[in-house]
Structure formats: C-alpha cells, structure tokens
Length: 359
Image 1: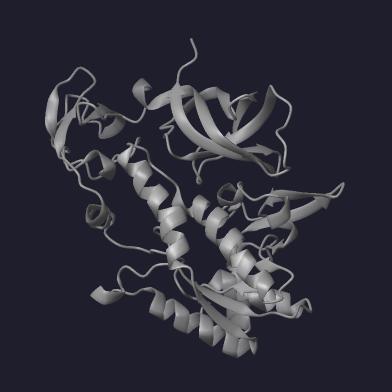
Image 2 (image 1 turned 90 degrees about the vertical axis):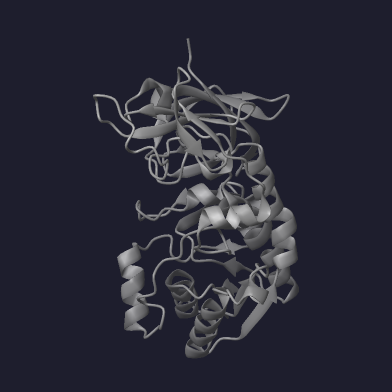
C-alpha cells in the first residue's frame, strides 16, 4: 500500500512498484480537519490528484482520516514545544507517529505486507538487521526525517525512490503520463501545508510582544512573540535599518524566555551564533540498540546541513548524549533533531535540548 499524497514522488513510487511486479494499492491520508469550515482545504486538490494517479495506474484507491491521531500525537507536541521556546520538527514526529505507525497498522489490517512512501532513502539488510541508508540523490536525501524508524517499521517499508535523482523521477512521471509530473514540491508543516506561519501559530498560541536587544542589552525594537523566531534567523526581524558602522545584517542569537527578550547580533560570523557542543535527549537507534561510544561519526543538526564530523558520548542511564564537533556549528537549535551517520548509514538521533562551548 503506497501512501499517495497527490505529489510526484509518491506517484512515481507507485509506478515503480507496479513495474517491479508488486500488487499495489494507494491510500490518501487526510490528517488535518481544522480549516474545513473556513473554506481553506489544500487537501482537496491533493486528494483529487492522488485519485487520478490511482485511476491512471489502475490500482485500488482508498482514503483514510487520521486527523484525530495527528492532532493528539503530532500537533499537540508541536504546540507544546513552541510554548517552551523550542523549534520543533513536526515532519519527523509525523513519520514516526502517523506514516509509519497509524498508516502502517491500517495497511496491515487491509492485508498489505508492506507500505511505501515517496521518501528519498534506502533500506539495506545486513546480518538480518535492517539499515536505513541515505538516498542516492544528495540534494533530496530524506533519511534525516526517518531516523526514528525501528526494525519492525523498516521490515514493512519500501522506499522505491531511494536510488533515483529527483530530475529522473519527474522524467519518469512525464514519460508515463502521470498528471503530477510538473507539480510543485510541497513545503510547510507536514500535512498542514503552506500558509502564513505567524498567523497560523497565533490561532493556537497566545503571544506577548517584547524587546529585541543586543547582547549588552541595547534596545533595538519590538518582537511579535518569541514563538515566531528561530535561532540563526535573519529575515523578518523588523530592525533592518538599525545598524552600526559595519552595516552587517542582524541574526537571532538567543531567546530569554524569562525576560521575553529576543537577543540579536550583527553578522553571520558573530561568535554568539556558533557552538562546539550540544546535549540531546529522547535518543533512538535504528539498529535497536545504541552504538558503543565514544564514537567518531558525522551528524546533521538540520536537514539541509552537510555532514559534520563529531564525537558522540551516550549517557546510558538517562538516554541522553553529549556531542562535540570538530568545528563550531552555526545556530544549533533546541527542539530540532540531531541525526548521526556512519558513511551512508543513518544510525539514529535525538532531540537537541542544550548547546554550549567546550572550554
């Protein structure tokens, strides 16, 4: 059963599996209801496209509404994290709780043996253990978002696009007359889509404007609520005209929740934006058990980052870890995930809760 989202990636995933001889069906997941009464429903077009793809491929098509599970298991965590001054990554939790849990259980009940998605990642079996590997296309590799998967989930999963570069996926879609071949890639929050993020958060959380200040406490302006800013952010601060002789842009360096202050510095090379170490919690290991540490490996602290060499030290008693980087890292952000790799193998990861500098 392929999770058909109405996009080009899942469309081609279904096509490839069909060509490989699988008995394929498609399922469209609706996981967000809150906007329906307001006439804003981006899922309608996606549902129509997913249904058209299934019809074109002549495969059974189903739809399921997992909105309640999404709200309880993903969205509430998302809101709680923002209230604590963190910057969460809902796509990772969405994969863990919805696509590879609720959807997987649903598919197995329907008699499916495997589920498939349009993720750019690969699965490899070695010594009867499932490994999660990076997608071949470095620009599209999505293993970062899948680090919470376990052996059971990987044993029932397929990633047909793992060996394909994105341009070839679009070419295949066009070659086989899939209507999604030139459809724009979706961005925004998992299943909620693209929208004015500030307005959206304001519907669910109360915010209090406060001062934007420099490291020494100089007042520069007003922020619109700390939840609307993330560490390392440059645009949208509203203080562009305030500058010293350097003329360099401002960046968010920190948030002071007690004082409700947004702390900013000038220039991307400012040392306050860089840290050499971090602490992470809620660790998960794809293999089912933690690797022996200390371990020299690579890691990403955000999706679009290149692999960074680090030393990993796991605290077994409380499932946390300390990570020390070879070079200082820009805008390490509490609430985001750090994901560890050994070459192309995704080892697992955790949630960042502290960043600091080694003495």
